[in-house]
Image (cartoon, rainbow, N blue to C red; front, side, top):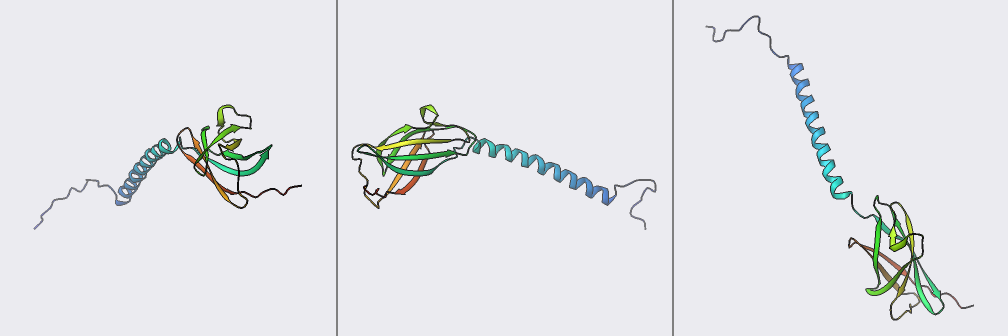
Length: 152
């Protein structure tokens, strides 16, 4: 009772070769999927603003109290600062660095002077929250404590 007839000269695919082919196909598909997902990620993240306030100091110019602010851009695109607030109140914004129009070059640092509009008094020991709003609508926030300079 021979249920099957086998050809003696028929060649089958070796299990070792079949395994190698399956692994190669799996690796090739995973490389294609990884490249595709990487392209999507760069598309979403490539234009993100990566700027931050690195330093704030309080200074008195005549009778006006101001904040000197250092902003560092670690991203690959320039960042434009559009407006400033101190504790939610409007403030004037002026570039004291080399870049015009409040633009921070990619991988650059820029310096700004922030002056409160209206009341320009800071209370000794009080904390003030500075918000710089970029042209893309992002907020750069920094909280600093004012320490009155001793009179000489």
